[in-house]
Amino acid sequence: MVDTPAIKFENISKTFQTADNEVKAVQNVNLEIKSGEVFGIVGFSGAGKSTLVRMLNGLEKPTEGKILIHGKRVDNLAGRDLREQRKKIGIIFQHFNLLWSRTVLENITFPLEIAHVPKNERIEKAKKLAELVGLGDRLHAYPNQLSGGQKQRVGIARALANDPEILISDEATSALDPQTTEEVLDLLEDINRKLNLTIVIITHEMHVIRRLADKVAVMETGKVIEEGPVSEVFTHPQQDLTKRFVNAEVDTNNTPDVKEVVNQLLEKYPHGQLVELRFHGDQVQLPVVSELVRQFPEVQLSILEGSIHQLADKARTIGTLFVQLVGSNEDIQEALKFLETLRVEVRVISNE
Ligand code: ADP
Image (tube, rainbow, N blue to C red):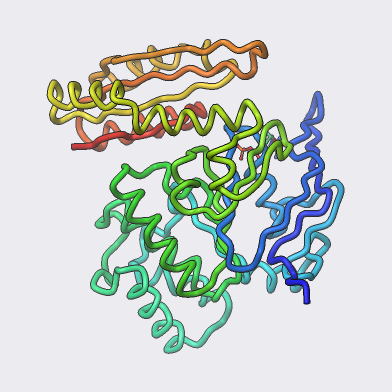
């Protein structure tokens, strides 16, 4: 018997009509994701990753093609059927999307309230989930009393409340420091094993893929340009973009140069945060840094190192900047959020 895939994208395209043109966000994507698999989708900002997964739970409708979940067509569902189907897919987000006036327990029970699960049952379930994600002793804390990693644990517990078949992680570790990222990835790995959950990870960070995914698809301008088992894609990347992702991961994390630079900086500014900023395409020309300095005068910014790779195609220019930010944690977080609104990729390397 052939196993029915957990997810099947069949010739999926999505075109957005805007006032003056059309955007081909996803183009002819064919993917099969097996049940229990951790599947990574990697690509730069604007590659079409979010649009592709938003079609899984009907937040966007494909312009062409079919989507099957466990063999059942889902792209044409509406009303009650769509609501039922959505319960089978949990999502965790970069900025957690928690209810700030509710406790940990109340955040986790929230999807169960919507599903009209009786009160006792939902509290019992939420307690078990809090235990599963390691927050059994923080049930009555509010999100702003929690660390970033703990907030994401609440997000994970909440996403699991309706016993989903599929968990989507949309840049869920991108706002976390490396140590916390590792902890959250450990938790996702644990959940994947314990619950045999199919996990789809959207990220721009290759190390997340390497750490957790079984398979990976690389997206560029709406298309899947390369796909395969992670071990193979890392050792034999075929496409230029894939090679850049793989090399960037190796460069940033392993080269002695960067390590040395990081160490020097940490010595020089023991209380600052070392952050890597990446700019793509036209962003390279934006006065992002001067804007940051102007808007956040209380944050002291030192540029450590930078490079711009101008490739043949201007849209593929990549700029990298290592900066050290010194200031209050709160101000720095605000500054980083500001950068993200400009779609600059932000990677916090240290926050001693
Ligand atoms: P990614 O998740 O890889 O960053 P997205 O799926 O968000 O990429 O975006 C893919 C492309 O589709 C981008 O060019 C984006 O601007 C465009 N896009 C996404 N949503 C919409 C929308 N609602 N209307 C118009 N264009 C959109």
